[in-house]
Image (cartoon, rainbow, N blue to C red):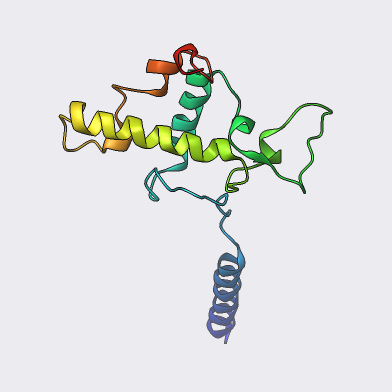
Length: 142
């Protein structure tokens, strides 16, 4: 009788734990709108690439990405990372950035693609900094 009660208690506990795990949602990914970079890119790799663009052009994320209307910044005059809508194509500068990404990927692939294990999207021979040098609009292109 005691063994049966223990078995029932363990079975109920097991069911509760399993249902609790099943009911728990995994943290959702931020919406992505990748048209140039690979869809299977990791969040860490994507963030690293985007930060390299920020440094190469001397800009912040809001240079290409629009601000989310429903997420105001907690500070007046300051845009927080949470207030940016990364998936939106609202700003035309984002499509300009995509064209420049395609250009550097093609240059690297055509002229510097020595290692077939490395994806051409991740090569860093010709980068944004090659021309921009910290300026969003290089002097030779103005």
